[in-house]
Length: 343
View 1 (cartoon, rainbow, N blue to C red):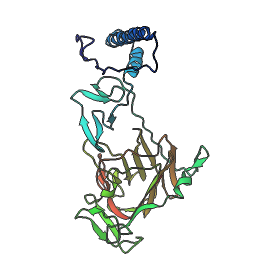
View 2 (view 1 turned 90 degrees about the vertical axis):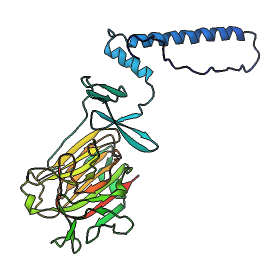
View 3 (view 1 turned 60 degrees about the vertical axis):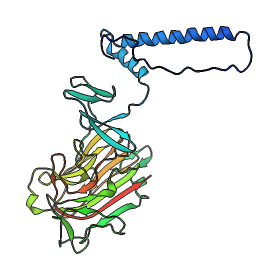
View 4 (view 1 turned 180 degrees about the vertical axis):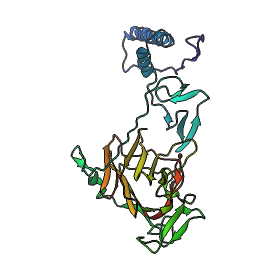
C-alpha cells in the first residue's frame, strides 16, 4: 500500500459465512448481536494495525512483530545465492526472477527491497586441514548411513561414457578424448583439456536424500600442476545468473580441494582440504549422512555437522570438467564416477 492511499482501500473482501444453530434458542438474536460487535471490533483493530504499520515513527522491532502476524503464510518466493534474484516454483518448474535495478530480494519481506536495506548476512563456513577424527553426532556417525547406501549410478570411462550397467547415458563434447594412461581402471580414461566436458542429464533437478555421496577418481595434467587457480572437477551448471548448488574444485599449486554446497534451507557451506598429494591418481569423496557432511581423499578429510543433508535441487545438469563461476574447466584425466542417494 503506497503512502497517502486510503488506509482501508484494497482490504481483502471475504465471503459471508452462514452460521446455522444446532437447536432453537430464544437468546440467539442476542448472540448474533454480540458476534456482530466482535467482528466489527476485529475489523477496526485490523485497520488500526495497518495504519500503525505505515507509521515511520514506529520502532523496527514492533514493525517486525506486526509483519509476522500479517504475513503468516510461507513466502512462495525462494532466495538464490545472488541478492538480486529469486525463484518461484510453478508446475514443478523453478522460474528465475530478477529484481528491478537498485533493489535486492528480501526473504523476510518476501519481495524486492531497496538494496541499502540491511539484511542478515548469508551464512557461510570454510574449514581446511588434515583431520582424521571420526566425528560422532547424537550417537550416529557419517559411516552409519553410507555403509548401507548402494550405488545409484556408476561410470568407468574406458572408451565410453555410458554407465556400467548400460542404462544411463551421458553426453560428452566432441573434443573429449579417451587416452591410455598408467593407473587407469580400464585401458583408457577420459581426458579433459579445459574445454571438454561431460553432461549428465540424469542429474537435472535431482532430489537429494538425507544420505548421498559423490565419488570421483582423477589425475591432474602435468601442464597445470603449478597453476594457482581453481579448476572445476565436477558440479552443476553453470546456470544463468545462479551460483552452483554443488561442486568440487581443485587448486593444483595450493594442493587444495574445495567443495561448495547449497542446502535446501538455503544455507551455503564451503569446506576444503589442503596438502593433498595430486602427483598421481586421487579419489575424492563428497557425501552426507543426516546432516554430517564430509569431504575426503585418502588420509585427508574434513567433517562438519549441519542442519540439513539434502542439497537444493539445481535447474542445471551435472557436468564433469565444465568451467563455472570463475573457475576453469578441468585439465587432466577422470577415470570413474559414482553417485549414491539413499533415504
